[in-house]
Image (cartoon, rainbow, N blue to C red; front, top):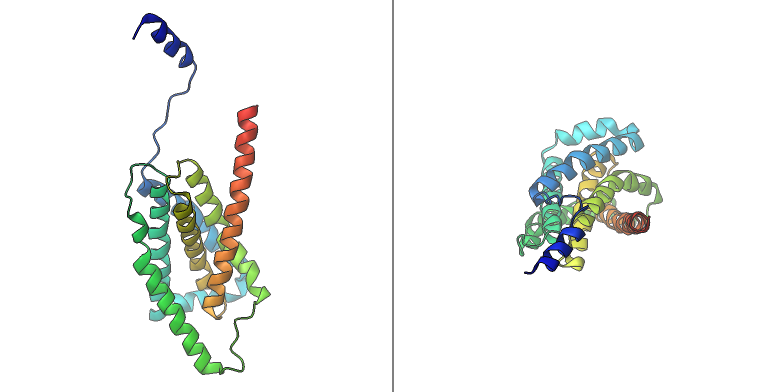
Length: 220
C-alpha cells in the first residue's frame, strides 16, 4: 500500500463516526420484551377495562396458564429467530425454534374451538368476522410490531422472507398474550387470524415510515 492510498483512506475516514457493534439477538430480544410486552398489556387493559376480573381468573386457571405459556414461548423463540435473521453470522437454523411452541399453541386453539363447537352447536358456531374484536387486536398488537420493525431495520436481512414471517409470528404472539388475558372468550382461531393480519399491516406501515424517515435523513 503506497502513501497516496493511505492518504486517501485517511481522508475518507477522517470524519466518520465510530461503528457501534450490534448487540446480540438475546439482548435485543430482552429489550423488545421489556418495551413491547408492558405496552401491549397496558393497552389491552385499557381497551378491555370491563374484563379486568377475567384476566385475574385466567391467571389462576391451569389451562389458561398453559395456553399463555405456549403463546409467550412462541413470541420468545420466533422473536429470537427473527433477530438472528437480521444479523449475519448468527444461527442459521434458529427458525426451527418456534415450531414446537407454535404447534402447541395451535393444538390448544383447536381444542378450544372443538369445545366451543360442542357447547353451542353448529347453528351458532361461526368464523365470521367479529368487528368488536378489532380494537383489542390493534391495541395489543401495535407495540410488539412497531418495536420489532425498529430492531429488524438496525440489522441486515440475510433471508428477508423468513425473517419477516418470523417477525409477524413473534409480534402476533406477544400481542396475543394481552388479548388472551383481557378479551372475552371467543373463537380463538379467528382472533389469531385477526392478530396475524393486523401485525402484517403494522409491520408494512412501520417499514414504509421508517424507510421514508431514513431517506429524508440521508438526503438532508
